[in-house]
Length: 342
Picture 1 (cartoon, rainbow, N blue to C red):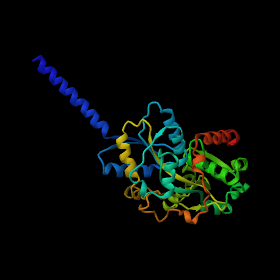
Picture 2 (picture 1 turned 30 degrees about the vertical axis):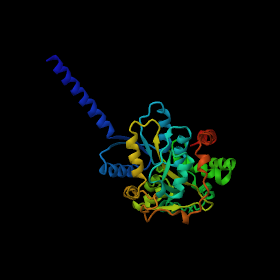
Picture 3 (picture 1 turned 60 degrees about the vertical axis):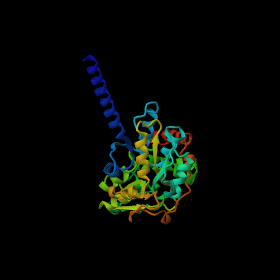
């Protein structure tokens, strides 16, 4: 009897352990650095076609980078989806993410493939979008302000307190802006420009898309953002006009990375491959996401700003995606701009 009872207990314990392992095999912990609406759309679409339960948290790209650095010895995240590519590159540079080459690699646009190759396949491009701004046409007309068409125009004293931009420490969008201006003007001139621009900034937000949302609500006149974020507000019915700066502008490669030490690695790879598919990327427009998808066969939203219509710089993702360059630029921004911020 004792032996039979012992066997029964062992079988019960084994079954319990199996149940725990089976449950764990069905989990995936993701940080999403896109807008909440598209995060929700992608989560729902993936769960619909798989038996994997997605636990998703929404954080800005800068916040995510800081989080996975802090948790490097005991990762709680399996995969990081979306957000500007610079912090993804920085995470790769520091060994916080792991190498993975998807079977769908050959289906991707050249800029997405280059992102992967330059990171040693520790990240990959999932979408792209150009930097610019959106302004509220009704407020502009009411206040008698001229249309800002160029970076230089944003320094006009008439825009004092009218502009919002994110903080580059928390926002990948704002770091991309900082790196873009440095590449257009040179570092010293770019920081001179930012010091003058600071006089016109009403708020440095945490999220990269928040400035144009504030403009849509009438809380600001101009929001410096990726152009697709401004387009999203126009599509939603707000009086927002999107601008591509006349001098030229940078762009983002929204990226995806598997965290080194991911507890649910197989499931992370399943999301990774799915998220690079034309089918998955065609879902993004359902979340009012108007970026250019990285899969050549994905449907491009008709409202998406096209690269061929924008004067783009040859953005150096390798240099400005390095940890050393990021630390140097942010340190100078904190000292020269952040300390003087309104």
